[in-house]
Figure 1 (cartoon, rainbow, N blue to C red):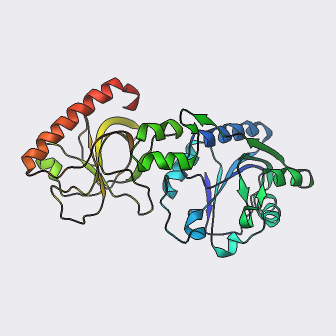
Figure 2: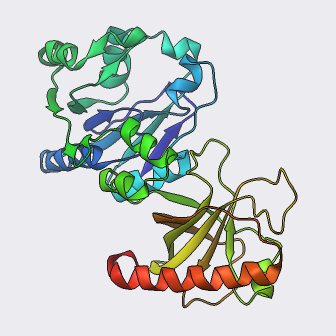
Figure 3: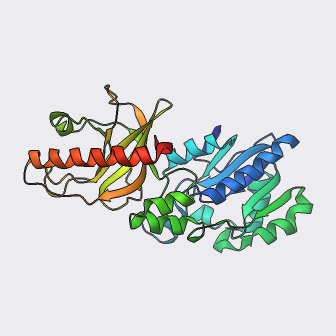
Length: 312
């Protein structure tokens, strides 16, 4: 997959089928769009994804937006979905003022060499969101591209959307979020050195530091899974400030105990996926009390994973 970022000056020689969007929390509705795009490979079209280098809300709402899926996490998913090109378009006051008509002329046609566009039914683009699927269709014949507009998918909780997923994550309803997401809610990053408290308790853990813009679920312990070097492992994960061993005001971390795993993997990259909330974060009176609780957590986790074999 070729990544085009930090520029609005690009031109793809090969004809493309394009989808456009924020893609925060890549869900089953997005998967349907990619499935439709892959059908165009038989016509010799390359799959191109047009998205933005920062969350749109960060500029429009003038505040730091928390994301379901970080930039590096999106890249990994888009590659898995078969994208040939990923455009991370700079989003700033200047580019936000580009009209819908200019976007079609300069970027869809001129930059992306578009021959087909696949978008959702609620798709908006251009200055003030004045462009939509109907506009794409009106301009299609003039510019020689096809348009396919996908209806929204529904799940057990209603329409599948990034907003609905975000609400589930914020209240800790991970199963409901995962029912909508294409992949379970996850963190991807480099294993960092911790204080090795887990090792002294006989339960060595791996530590990730969440990206500053990553949306976090409530602090607590979760049934989880780890993917490392192509293998999957069952695990339990603590998200929080480790109040038993850290001072007040410590940064939120992601600490994971992996079943049936040994080895030094500091500096390596892995994925930690969350499956279900187990309990809140607790401040214990002693390390012995903490160890006893962790042993109970591990036993609960082993039981849970045995009943959910697809998670490991």
